[in-house]
Image 1 (cartoon, rainbow over the protein chains, first blue to last red):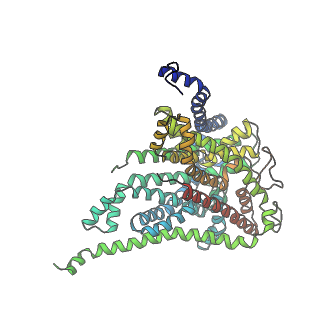
Image 2: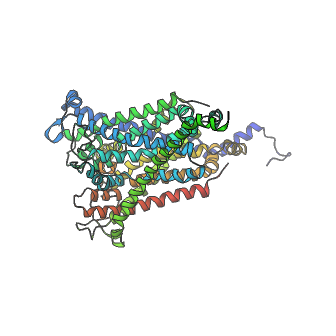
Image 3: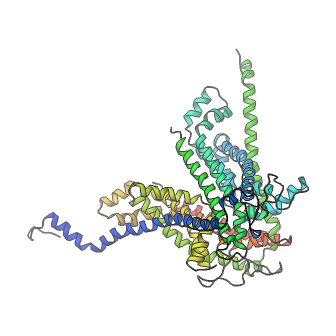
Length: 312
Length: 289
């Protein structure tokens, strides 16, 4: 409180006095950003940690096993010292291809239906139901693949192994349907209605509008969602561990038992592998291969959605 | 030209439109049918084995005595460590990125980094946890190692959710607060955070429900499959619900499938409740500006 009779303060002095009084405040004001920055670096540290973990063990692994044996060898049998990663990669690719064959048509059709054909009411009901599929734990999918899809398929393919790539791949495909459906639908929803109305006004049918106008305009978003879904399928672990078997197998026959990169990591970590043995470090070499695959897919997806984005 | 002639021109195109519409509808229903089959199958197999004893018993060699108690308590213990750790880290990261960070290379790097972390397969986080928490920090196959691994796994999801929630607070109310003489931190603590909390909570609960259903990284960092005690300290051995379901599913005898199905029902009910709470918070407390 300043009354006129009191000694005159200049405004600057008052501000100064105020600042001194608030030194505790100042401490908070300066300390908080530093603390927040510290927290933000945890995510960077996680990335560095992942890279360090994978690289250090992988380098150790390649001191025992040559690069050519790992990448060109065709037999994976770590307990008898065969470290050719090709069968594991083949298994992963087989699962991924089957999964995409299931998820791409269904996911895309669902996206088109929801965004172009369905009424607002239908959309509000079906979309959350599809998202339930995304929330189901993968161990549940694995259980379903092994105890329901496999026995059902073995009615068709009578000589099929109970653990097989087909049932695993189909169920992985179902798991990634909501991802393709909801991301593609977002991309199609972002296409402005004026474009649709223009085409409809010229006499196009809804399907023609979808195919010639909406799909090309949303193309980058759709492709990005598919690439992201592929990355998810490559990294999926529990479904293939439970349902696709544990037999490294260089094959394209989906009725056989196979092993994926991820399933080997589980098998290797579960077994009695001693710390720093070759088998132990082979888990990380396989993990590194997996990490590079998925990272490339994620970067590709981000690149596509940035580079080919149409702005309206 | 009359209407009939006109229609014969476009008849083929209209037919095509009607046909593909039904194809789209059928494809969408395939996904829905699959979901119905999955839930129907699990219910029909598992309901018979659900009982109070199933919730109270430890794992056992006989299906009549097997129970999910250790898993339920383990999941609970894990989430009660993971939730505060990942939320504090996640919200602070988001606050830094949205409120304080200047637009420089380092900030962009953190942003891209969070995005990419969200796409790393969960099993790779397991390898990270195995090297750092289990071996390097000598925690061993303990609850704390599993919970910290899980915290890092859900961190990017929480950061993204928190960022969105903070961004949706309009800048007018920030400016009003600053204009009234509040400092930056006072504005964030008393204005921005309270307005963003519902969104942050919704996103976080969804992230935690992912953590509860996650199995792969916990296998790597050594969650037990069968254990006869509940965790009583940070360094005790533990199991979680999905681990128990996995171990029952992996048994060759068919009758264990029914036990696994019963476990799945409990897991799904818990996840459903968490999701319902998340939706409820969003609808009840979300402010519209």
